[in-house]
Image 1 (cartoon, one colour):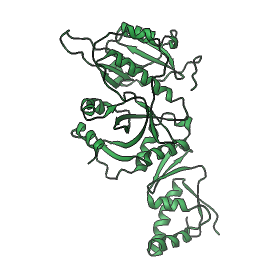
Image 2 (image 1 turned 180 degrees about the vertical axis):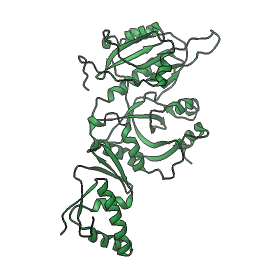
Image 3 (image 1 turned 120 degrees about the vertical axis):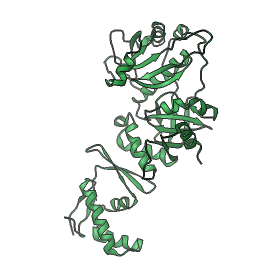
Length: 94
Length: 286
């Protein structure tokens, strides 16, 4: 379960490079590569264990001029996918 | 560069039907040589060719070892004196790496190919399996083992100013983003050249060894991909073609590929229809 107070953090073992807004992530655990599109790259790049999903949604909604409810649905869905792929882990809630 | 001359290290050749088919061609001998930390088997279709290779690389010969047939040199017989020399072929495993009418060129290309294998032992360059062409002092690079369409197009490529690099592994400098075409620095006994037939065919021009900026990065596509080709997608597929990525490390491999791709034009090369025309179009652009 992922709530808006959660503070996911990028797995420290991962290696990544960014090209034209997309990110290629290498996971040494399974030697797998993952391609993050520009939106996923922003979310993955921002989730550093310090910022909560809710605060990130508010910042993205303000930046892109989109209703925060819409941003929350997309960000939560994407964050779950990144957690499922072991590219993020959930830190402690505040 | 380190080389282990004492231990035995073979590069296995997969037992495919393609390999079995090539095995049925007429072969005279296979000799084993220590190159770049590997013991490589080089198979020749004639005893004279095997003798020449053994003479050239004599100090690397491992007479007591029988390695897999990593490379095969097929010297095409001449049908009649008045007819043009048929194509000799260099195979890596069962894949054609080069075709030419000159036996000397065939052996020189083998030496460049062996130089590419030695790149696997270096950690300052990415050893990338790729087809590389040089045009106007810059490189066109296609990460792949599939050289056939480019060999089929080689005459028209040369006519239009693109010289094809004959070896299948090239270096990528992860710092500068340049492609490095290594000279054949293997020490050879020049007497071996005298054992090769003379005048069987003209040698084809190839690019000068050296460093070239990568101007165009082509991504082979077997069918139209609905997703647009991006630099990141090209990096994703190129990663597996870096043969020494364990030695270099994944972080430097990723960063090196990103450096090259970041300064290159990335274009798809769709292998359907008139493939030669598609290659020209991909190189020359719209």
